[in-house]
Amino acid sequence: MIDGPIVVELVDAQVVRPLRRAVLRPDQPEEHSVYPDDDDPRSAHGAVRLAPHDPVVHRDAPAGDVVAVGTVLLDPPPWDPARVDGWRIRGMATRDDARRRGIGGVMLDALLTHVAVHGGGLVWCNARTPAQGLYARAGFVTRGGVFDIPGIGPHIHMWRTIAVDHPPTVDHPPTDTRPLTDERGTGEPPSAN
Ligand SMILES: CC(C)(COP(=O)(O)OP(=O)(O)OC[C@H]1O[C@@H](n2cnc3c(N)ncnc32)[C@H](O)[C@@H]1OP(=O)(O)O)[C@@H](O)C(=O)NCCC(=O)NCCS
Image (cartoon, rainbow, N blue to C red):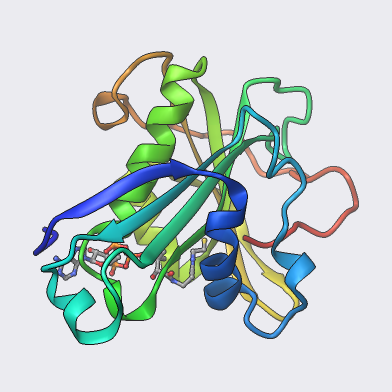
């Protein structure tokens, strides 16, 4: 899948913010790339670096540059605000010249492993619709319809459960057959990734 060695690390929030901003918020002020609870000790931030002999590194960047980032934070899903074991995936971003090599999937897997070893629970995200496949391959299912986040574009809620200390790749995706209601229930617009 990945045609060169990579290193996946858990890092501090300030390590992920530059790429988070460059990919997800390029036209917005720096503070818009700081998430509430970024610095909560229960949050996890992942960074992927390519090893020195990787062809992408040789072509475009010095060895060791961060080419992908992602974050998971304790945050209940908008449709179940009382859920204390709710975790939200945010800030998934792969540098454009390193995409479609499986790196995003590896990052997501690392974040789901963090959830598994920190009690498990329900993991959700506001997925940009073009990124739906990434989450679906990791066992997420959609909930509700597509909604627009102004200035960013169409999104859809996706979620799955993760068992405590259970490898994410063998956990079973949920089946959500409940009818749609006002899922956010807060009247607040959803925040983007
Ligand atoms: C979404 C994003 C993080 C995915 O990162 P990525 O590193 O490209 O992720 P992956 O490589 O694991 O998977 C992406 C695609 O590459 C494909 N892929 C994976 N390995 C591949 C390989 N070796 N060769 C070709 N394609 C491959 C996957 O099948 C997937 O295809 P799909 O999107 O059509 O389903 C990245 O595209 C990105 O930063 N996009 C802009 C920001 C964004 O939308 N973030 C998500 C917000 S919810």
